[in-house]
Amino acid sequence: MQTLHASKCGLSTAQLPSSILDVIDSLTKAGYEAYIVGGGVRDLMLGLSPKDYDAVTDATPAQIKEVFGRRCRIIGRRFELAHVYSGRELIEVATFRAPPKKAVTSAAGMILRDNNWGTIEQDFARRDFSINAMYYQPRKGEVLDFCNAVDDIKNKTLRLLGDPALRFEEDPVRMLRTLRFAAKLNFSIDPDILEIFTPEMTQLLRDVSPHRLYDESQKLFTMGHLHRVMPMLIDFGIWNQLFADLPTDITAFIEHAAKNTDQRIQMGKTINPAFFYAVLLWKPFLERCEAHLAKGVAPAEARAQAGLDVLKRQATRTIIPRFAETFIREVWEMQTRLLNPKAQQIEALSNHARFRAGFDFLLLREKSGDSSTLGMGVWWEAYQTMSGDEKERAISQYNRQRAKNRRKTVTTDVVEELKGNTATIEPLVKESESRSRRPRKSQSSSGSSQDFRGREQRVKSNSGEIDADHPIMKRKRVQRDLTKVVFGPTK
Ligand code: ATP
Ligand code: MG
Image (cartoon, rainbow, N blue to C red):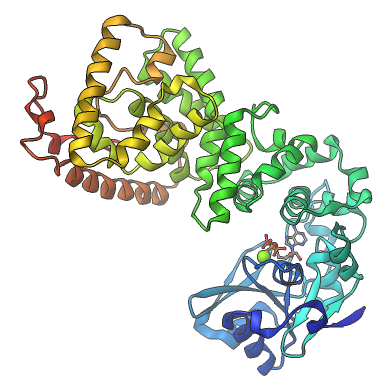
């Protein structure tokens, strides 16, 4: 073990938020050892800004609770941890861990329960990569380095502690972490890892819970280097473990969406990981649509069924939460609505809660060369920047063109259907369908339907903003009062 001077590693307390210092100071004052460990130390040493800070201590969760009282909550079963609130921030505080007892590992060697407290040396040996196992005591200005990790930082190498095969068997998610950190930090992977990181090894991911794999997939999507990690996931055979039935040839659309996701993160914009799932599963969704249509299923029903089929298959790998599944199906359904809307629905559609995501998706399809969008991505893009008068003109021009096209072709095949020949405004997805397929806890379903009630209200009031003397309202064909148009799924 070597003790490094924090200042020589480019670390200083001035870089740290008061929340983590508060946690370290409170534990120290109560007589415990306390360090910052993991990604926070690693990223600071690399000159990056850490996403968050993790603390580690020799105090047990119960003792941490005593120190912080109501500011502390004990969470987790497999890994018991303390969550400490400092101001608005939440700091994860772990207790030094000893090796797990044999009885709590699975037949394949996977650790199932892990609450055996130990010393700092034991805790170090339990961590995954050398660069994630440096212990920083900011008040003492010291970094404890048990394995010359500082050299791995300098040489930009990702090295697992201990025997790589054993470490992957203990926790197969470390395979995903390997690729995530290699992509995020632009580090090379230690040859000892590469040697055992085989397609057979990735089979171990089958034993990992699909809930945990969903969490990991989210981290992959949101780390800011999705575009870089995708080919790595494919090369190492992780892609097939994460995404059911997804071909390994990345479509231009997926590639474009991945770059776009990374750019958004760089600009500090929020991203919804479910959006990228919608992108990934778009092709399988279209294929399922075709299959249902070929069997004579009506287009709207084919889309609904296809959405459920694809998500059900995906749930065998990563369990996408219910609200995110609904979001994905709504984005897909929006593609139909946005491609060929009825003229009188255009303004209301542009105020729909799912418009933004549906439009972004449509534009990404178009920009990646999907000609079946018929230029409507760019049309909607322009529409949003128009004044009221310009919008009216654009709508009538669009309507004339639409009528002309309709006279030319009347077709019912799926692609046409996806271009939106059923423009009646109906719920984007029927919640009741997914409920019957995958029963879920009533609590979560009531939460999401509340959300939709709120949205419905918003959209109603938005559509009500169209004046009675608006040209659209004067058209003979229009008999409905737009304020009565109901958006959102049926209850
Ligand atoms: P980031 O937060 O930037 O994704 P991180 O390294 O902080 O990266 P966390 O998941 O926050 O990752 O974990 C904190 C620390 O806990 C890690 O740095 C590592 O030391 C340890 N750790 C996390 N997951 C594992 C694991 N599966 N096996 C061993 N150690 C782990
Ligand atoms: Mg972290």
